[in-house]
Image 1 (cartoon, rainbow, N blue to C red):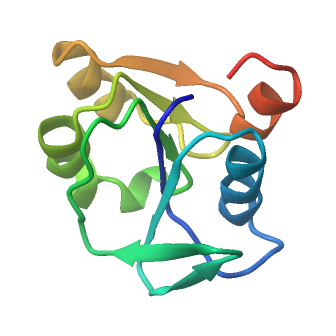
Image 2: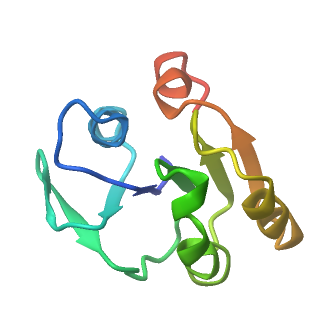
Amino acid sequence: MKRTLVLGASTKPERYAYKATVMLAEHNHPVFPVGLKAGEIESHQILVNTPIIENIDTVTLYLGPQNQPMYYDYIVNQIKPKRIIFNPGTENPELQKLAQEKGIETEIACTLVLLSTNQY
């Protein structure tokens, strides 16, 4: 099971970050939603700011590139995941380069599709 941080979490069920949090949990991946506002996604508390969470395998992004720079240091130097998934609309060559320089795998993909097709 891959400990996953969902960056850009929302309490709105129609948002893909919400759906990903639910689907990750359904696939038994420990999931840590992080967003701008505290709240809940089913039984998961949305963490705010930049909480330090140990042993994260994957960060899955649900923030547009314009909202990512404030999280660069958090992702690559504090969380230090094994990989970052850039979901559709979150592609960012600058963050990809920073991650790859730190040995973090990057993947342009859709978390929901990866989970649905057992490729997560």
